[in-house]
Image (cartoon, rainbow, N blue to C red; front, side, top):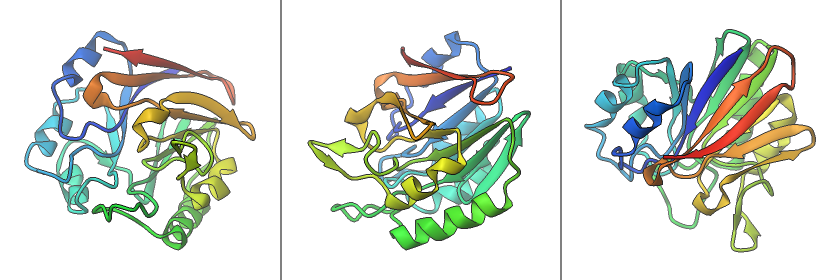
Length: 213
């Protein structure tokens, strides 16, 4: 029914993007850390050069001003918002829960909870419901060493979705399923990693392929 390319963690390294054009997809979604603490100047043209619909959220390493840059581009800023693409509804949450590093776009768990409560309260349920978040749910593709560092609030709201697309933890690339919800971390696009997501006609018919270019 629809194929989507999931990218994340570009960290200002855009050289691999053109290599993903060898795949067929109907839309691109970007799960944050488009830059590495800036600069913001290239972002508008990078996003506008994607020739299919593109939806993005910022990551914790993106300056908060990137929201305005995404909105000026041809892409859709999905942070604190939602949008339907055919039979797929995508909700977005940028930034991350607190880190030890004081990065530019961090949110408290209370802020994340409030944002997700609002989003799930207004979004229209669809055949497939997807959360595009930079931070992973707690204890789900979120280990740094043996310590889980994901968001408790994302985990709390996770069951409202069929799929969570996340990033943030580079070494946690993978696909898993928890409580009937699929979770995917495509790995850093700066190193040529991504994921293709195929949404079928029926609920829960979601197939995920990790790719490398």
